[in-house]
Length: 159
Image (cartoon, rainbow, N blue to C red):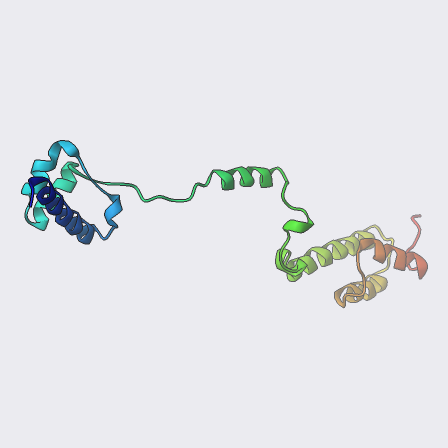
């Protein structure tokens, strides 16, 4: 065996030891060419660990996927882009919780009823009936309440 192949074999075993020590692939291990003699003379795992600490044996950074495209998309989403029909996945209830949707609607309706009662546009009796209808899900919106009140002549005119 020539000296060159012997050196290669010697370094190959060192690479294997480093690989087992740190639990990484052989491709990520880099020996500095200036300190090859020092690496060859290392016999134990302890010697190799000290060489890694010194920086004689270097470990390359693991390759990862670039996040540049994702960052660009996030900026666009903040501007309100990428939210069209084709980008939506799942039902409407998956994007907007049905309970939160209900809470938002019922609070608006109840506030309207309170406002009408406080301004004496509806009586307490009518308020109670409308409140219970709203609770039962009878009204679709605030506009629906107002149209119902005018159609059934339950709203009083201001004096």
